[in-house]
Image (cartoon, rainbow, N blue to C red):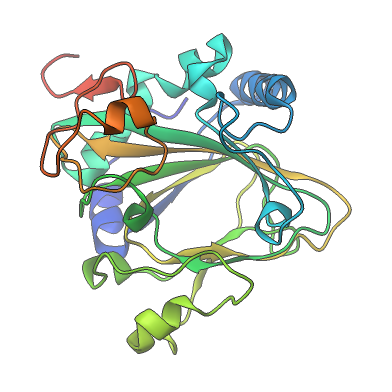
Length: 266
């Protein structure tokens, strides 16, 4: 596994809000990730969350991608992969924070002929608001211009507020919130299987439709800077935990959001 980002890569990430890393996983590691992701999805069946409170259906959104969230919570193989402190260190180094917690992971599978993913921001969905939130997106299959690779609007992380639009049937709804971005040229992010990208939680991004009869698998994980505070949104937090929180309270539940890297604790 690629483990050390250079100063040039850190500069690129902080300038653009996105960094693509080629050959993040070697061939053997890629096989392990594929096996565990496929197995964890099969075990979940139609449950997006382990507790069954969210299930897949036949909506437009469900035909954007097959989505299974927090596989690390109920699959031991995924737990070992997602809680890898080496990934946490890269995320912390890129984001410029001392510590990183898992917010949630997601398997995002573009099924054959899947709908496009509309332009959106990530962090406004979550239960904390941070200019330093960061996600990893690992290609488990080649992600191409034909099967739904990511697209980014570099630099938008420095301009975005925490306003957002949902992932709807309207690809360009985000530009109603940020009309100044409508004429920006997007950066396509095709990746070979085993490559990855890191992007800021406020970097505008989307993905094309899958115009092929083959699946396009990806595994992602969103990370929360240690010390982030509750903003009042539920997102994936369980009701029993939400009931104990007040706005502004530090989110430090190690069972729900494990700290996987802390500077000085290597």
